[in-house]
Amino acid sequence: MDFAFATEPGPDRPNEDHVIVSAGLAIVLDGVTQLPGLETGCVHDPVWLVQELGNCLVEALTLQPTAPLGGILAEAIGRLRGCHEGRCDLTNPNSPSSTVAIVRERDGQMDYLVLCDSSVVYEDSSGVTVVHDDRTESLPAYDRHTVARLRNQPGGFWVASTDPAAAAEAVTGSVALDGLRRLLLCTDGVSRLTEFFGISWTEVFGLVERSGPRAAIDLVREYEMNCSGLLARPGRRRVKRHDDATLAVLRSASRTGALDAGPAV
Image (tube, rainbow, N blue to C red; front, top):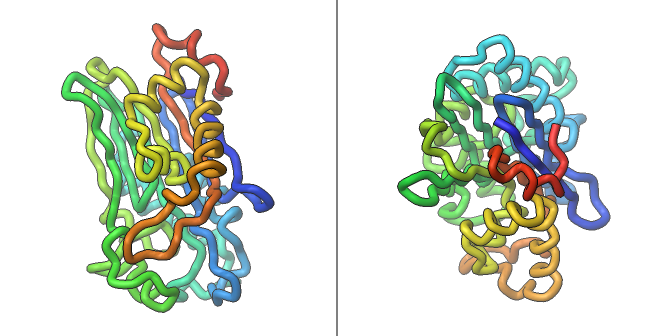
């Protein structure tokens, strides 16, 4: 598999997203932004967490290239715990955390995993499929106390943080590579195009095929500037106007020229 990608932080802040691509896999992580004054029990921030988690995932995938992705993520979170080097309170529910989206080529299949609100979107003969973990959208409240109480708990929502058991709650599956037409992974800073701004995934795919993945982020920023009133969900806090935005998109041989506008490694 050959991927192009783009990532951009929100204005005036570090990028808490992280993307890794190689010949046979892609990983997109979105560190959960910490509220001001929130006690996390940890000396690290979300930027550190996504980078270390990415390293742990690559190590686990390299050592076990065909293992189930849920087990890979559990092992990576276990490795991540060791990276805190005893300096942090790993029992604190507000410890830094991240969403996870992974795709991997294996024996003619494309395996995928999604934890929390990043997305894997693909198109095959059945049409467009969006793999998304929407449990954050149905919490009883969104104040910091309720979110902390329900993070990585039954009936709440699950993220990659300090508990390897969260990996068992990820959405996983596989699709045949020979029928795969289009594929992308993205953070919610990109999926707001479809969630809030009324752009279809077919239109997103068409845009990145014509102009590269950077064009999707540029379109996000245009809508954020001109249509920020659409960034709202009933019963929830207003969504931040600008968010970190990251996507990785599969490049097929027939579309490589169209996607050369985006970088790839």
